[in-house]
Length: 124
Image 1: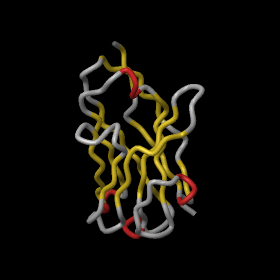
Image 2: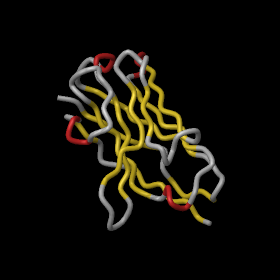
Image 3: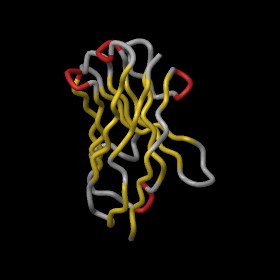
């Protein structure tokens, strides 16, 4: 079993930055691919970014490519999502997810464990 706890969300003006963290516990973190997803009010949950268990592969949604960066620190059992050049359309609840295997995927059904989410609100 894996427990995931997100933090770092908040209210920021357009053009600003935030850094989200996802602290993991309960199994070998370094063997798990990690992903970030987001869900805006009234919309489906969307893929944002993913990183493989070996950190050699990162995948991004086109809408965030060049603005967001996913990373991980296995010594701290933590994954991160750096959000730069934020836009109002980035407003959503951001969820961290983990796979039981190391391969990064952009599909939410591929993930086995989920955090409770952290709210990101970008004002115009």
